[in-house]
Each structure stands twice: as structure tokens, then as C-alpha cells.
Image 1 (tube, rainbow, N blue to C red):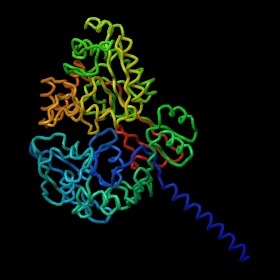
Image 2: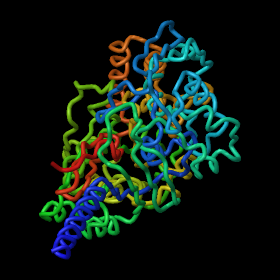
Image 3: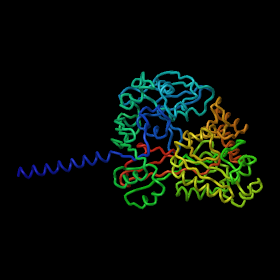
Length: 529
């Protein structure tokens, strides 16, 4: 009798233990990502995958929502109290992971440390307008800018707040070590830093003292799997719960797997083609390789012919395998300043040939077309397809697909005459993109940094500069949409297609609310119902 009772108790304990174990396992989320952070110091670099990972540990002053809408975070409200002064009211009752209180001192400290510790691709771009930070009281700061700065709250979506106590005294030489070991990795985010193995795995634990919504995952593992096939294989084997950027070629197969689910979104990244408008274009010649009398890209008819020879819907459907959408301007529809009145660009091969003939290039010319092959999904396929499309109007295109590590330095040296890359408007407002891509190159004004091929329009410059200091949102967006219309007409750059992204996941384990900036955050991933 006693033996039987002991057996029943042992069996009950075993069942209970299994239930506890299963429950604990259900609270662990494993994400397969393409890339992870480059440090645990959130101020080290502005790289997107770096910021994505560290949003779990460190909160930002302003949050960027799933459609890039501005939302309260550590700041509950903000307003311009003077043309060059923004007031931010801070959230009360927020605790750092070490139990200390979040205050205005942490905000001031975080802003001021960025210029001293920023590394490659520096985060200084997010505080470039800040002249001074004044603490008014423990939950109020005034940020003094170098003139009217209407987009400061947009910039602050990447202002990560660190503990002024935990990070005190750190320099560019020792900050990474202090954060990477966890000593200084004290944030206010929903997850606490546990460990990080570079190029391998970031381990996070839920912070039960978090001020916001309690997270369902007790532990989050972010596994770096840069190889697309490896990510898919681990998902199918059940080694990860969800993967980012599921390859477009695999999406149909993944959708047919009864154990898996796929979610897609049109992101804020889009491909655009830039054309050389300088008097001497180094990679444009006659078809026999001889020099031309003038640069054909300077002719508006040639630019229009190229524009309408490109079949954008076909690129989105075929070259991008359905994970894309035709674009008619340099920002996507979710971006403030998007021009809703611009029509879709319809391919018209007959008209394109006629324009080439009218411009004096009935027999075409030869150009090297450079584009990335490893930056965004479909970049190689889109670039190759554009080259084929332009051949139909007599332009002999030498397709030059390059790794980003080769493409971007050469592009920065202005070596290309026709090039395509991807650009994402991560701040949610068009001035970020237009001031970089189509304002004339003006280092003194810190404008036009990526406009290296000679485009200059005084009206465009003035509209962008005026928008940069216009505090009235409606007026500012009108200026930016006017710029979009001018650029669409003059065609120094051709918007091609926005880039779609796909997540694949274990259907019975998780669901995700996708973001247009492609950030994959544990906070947006919930247990399947």
C-alpha cells in the first residue's frame, strides 16, 4: 500500500515536473537573425541591426511605431517651447535594471556621451542638431538646438538612454568592454542583458521591473545566421521559432509547410537608380568604346526614356519574386512628405525608343551599371533585370554586381556613372532622405552627402532647407512633397521598387506584428493563441 502510494506520488511529481519544464520552455523565444549588434554599447554605431538588437535592453526617448509613427517612450510628451528649444517631459517611475531610478540626468548624460564614444557609422547623426541639454527638474529636460529643428523628435527615435551611473567615466577606448561584459549594460528596456557572443548569439532575460507591458518571454535568444539556407534549415528543424528575411524563393515552400506561417510587409527600403549628370561621365561611351560628344544623361529625354523603359511591376513580381512594390518617388507611402498626387510610372517601350531617337541616340550608347548583390533581398536580380530592360531601347548595359563592401567605397569616390542601391527612410520623414540624396552636395551645410553625381537645382535646395527649419508640420510636408514632384520630373534619380520582407515562424509557437523598418523585436512577437 505504501509502495503504491509512493509510486503514485512519484508519477505525479514526474508529470508536474514535465509540465513545469514545458511551461519554462514555452517562455523561451529563439530568433534567427541575419546579423546582430557590433557591441552592447548602443551609442557605438548607427547600423540598423545593432540598434534592432539593443532596443530590447535600452529604451529610446521617443519610440518609432510599426509604421514609423512617433510614440511616447521614456519621454511622455515633447513640444517646441521656442524655435530652438524642445521640452521633453519624462516618464515617472521608470527603473533601470539595477533598480536605480531613471531621471533627466540620464538623458543629458546619454546625449552628451555620444560624440565621445561613437565608432563607425557614427550615432552622432541623431544628435547633430543638439547644442545644449538643460535639466529643468528630474523629469524635464530642455534641448537647445543650433536653430529651429522640427525633426528632432524623429532623430531621437535612436537616442538610447544609458545609466549615467553605470556608464560614468567610460571612454571610446574602454566603453565597449564595459558594455560587452555586462558591467555597463544597464538599461530600462523590457529585457536584461545576459551575455553576447559576437557573430553568434545574444542572450536576454525578461526584466520584471519594466515600466511597460509585461513580456511573455522569460528568455530571448537572438542567433546570428547570416546564411539564408541555414536560417531556413534551422526553422524547419525546429531549432529556432522565427527567422527574419526569409528568402523570397523559399516563401512559397514555407507557406505550404503546415507547421509554419509566413508574414510579409512592404518595408521603407527601396531601390533607386542614380544617373551621372556631370559633364564627363567616366563610365559612359559609344558602343565601340569611343568617347561621346556629351554625357547623354544630361539630356532630359534620355533620362525619361530610361525611366519608362523600366517595367517596375515586372521587377516587383518577377525579379523580387513578389516581395516588392513599384515605386514612383524616393520615399514610401508611410513617410511624412510622401507626394500622394504623383502617378504610377507606367512602362512605355515605344515612347522610350522615340525619346532616345529625338535625343540623338537612336543607336544607343554603352554604360556600366553598378549595384549591390548582398545588401537587400533581390538587389542582384533587380539590377540584372534593369540592364536587360534598357537593352530594348538600345542602351548596352554592362551589369556590375558588387558586394556592398566594394560598392559603397567606390560610389563614395564618384567612380560610377549609373548605380543602384537601397535606401531606407528610417526616421519616418522625407527630409532625412531628400536632404541626403537630392540636395546639392554642400559639406558646409551638411546636406547632399550622398548626391555625388552633379545634380543641382536651386529650387530643390531652397525647399529642403526651408523644410529643415519649418516648425509647421503641414507646411513642411508640402515643401517635401513639392521636392518629390520636381525630382520625379527631372529624374536625377529613379525610384524603382520598395523592398518587401518576410518572416517565417513556427505556426503553433509564435505570431508577429511586422514593422516597415524590418526590425524584429521580441516585443512584437507573441505566443500563438
